[in-house]
Image 1 (cartoon, rainbow, N blue to C red):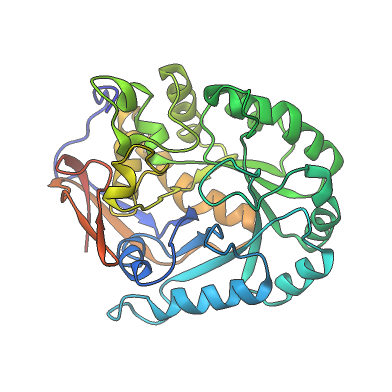
Image 2 (cartoon, helix red, strand yellow):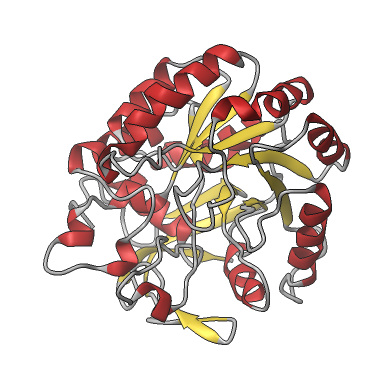
Length: 358
């Protein structure tokens, strides 16, 4: 953690929330998916499934096949219908309006994901020029589909800590001007500049925030040796950026909502000479958000952030189920199964002060 809790609540305090949704989740493919779903379904009623697989989910047929894969790998003990994967298409320069219409007609595909080519994991097939996507985006605006954006430029000459602010100026502002009715989510924002922009932008522009960007700054990654399990994209930033994100998330405004960007990788893929980007938080995401909100005495704002604002922006009914958090410590395992391998979760071997209870 980057700061000491300023507004601690007593041990044993319970917090009942409407069942949250996760509007940014990486479930991966193959046998590993079942292990990720085991964690995600414990705390979310729905989750946006990211499409950056190999190959990427660029068509309606691929999205429906991936949905079947997710449903087939749900925990066997899970009551039928208690978890819904929300599907996305991977936007490319060549995505057509006809494909958008076909995807929307299924009722299962809720959004398209804009990856700038080369910006993050499996994004090489992403967008090279925003204007090439405009025909597809116009169709999305007409249908009410959401555009999810990884809001960083991938230009090699732009410093990695500056890629989000540059993207706002070069891509987001012109896009919002040109597409005034398109629902947009700037995903996993990581800077004060992004917070300020979203607050000033029209109501069709909102943002998701991860629990790790609320709890950690770049010291967690770099001080005392490189900590590869804190390496994510967008990369962790300076403390004043974290403080701006925490202020935004806990403000009560519907401009911001929960999106974990939980991104599993095997231990050897993270702990290597060229480690993968991504923090795994599916095992304890809601508990970590509670920890962050408790730091600033804003637990009363957690339900709106986690359960209402995102569903409202996507045009989804709010969940009717409930989940209970208790101020009760538990120690995170050092490893979790991940297909035939293992992964190391965020806060591995450490204590988290909040628990999910029956």
